[in-house]
Image 1 (cartoon, one colour):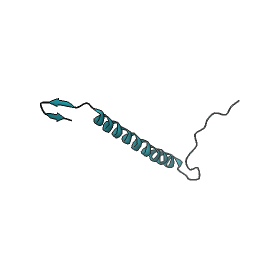
Image 2: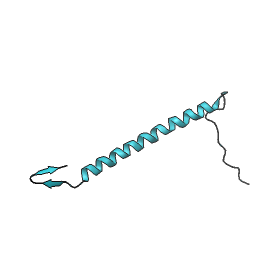
Image 3: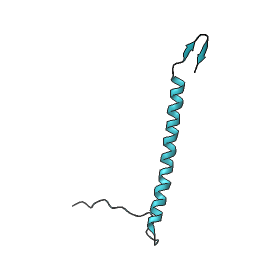
Image 4: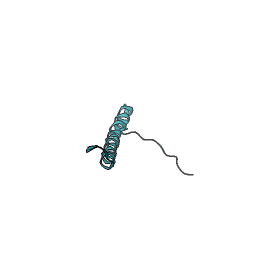
Length: 62
C-alpha cells in the first residue's frame, strides 16, 4: 500500500514551527504576485500598442 502524502514543517527543530510555516508561505507568494503583476502590465501594454487608432478629421486619437 502506498504511503499518503504528508505535510512537513519548514523547521522542525524549533518550538513553534507554525510561525515558520506561515512565513515561508508568505515569502513564497511574493514572487508569484510580482510575476502576475508584471504579466498584467505586459498585457495592457501590448493591448495599447496593437489597438486600432481612430481618426477624427485630421487628428489621430490614441
